[in-house]
Image: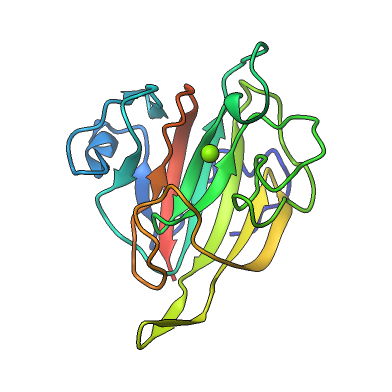
Length: 208
Ligand code: MG
């Protein structure tokens, strides 16, 4: 997919060969479960999946290794909150690597702000929109390579946020808070419940 501008990176249609993980059909909800496989506590309405704080992380039933992932997200307006308490969620790649979701509008981005690989890389630029505005991530993820129990090649990630490249083919390590600390295995897309009502929509994945 070619991303031409911030505007047309929203509502990008699923290309040929992609699997829709979150669309307008009711069926979308059935593609997500709690970590333990139980039905999710998040709300799903008109194609929008919204975190219900305290109900737990949600994950896709299906697992993936190398892929292109499109996801749209919206952080809530939380003027009283600051830092990690303001619109926090996360999109875990293969269930293990957190691409941070946060209201980081207008900040000098650190390695725990929106667009960061949590505590490893800050985004190259702050491409964030204001809270309550829809934003997009276009992610290319390649699994780590593990031989005889040893990680010989780290996973790699490229991320475009709202049409701007913020992470360029970065080698990454497993971050805390995911399903496990085992690189190299396929895993689900996992969305973090950090207690804030962050919303997601139009999510599709194309295995590579
Ligand atoms: Mg987070």
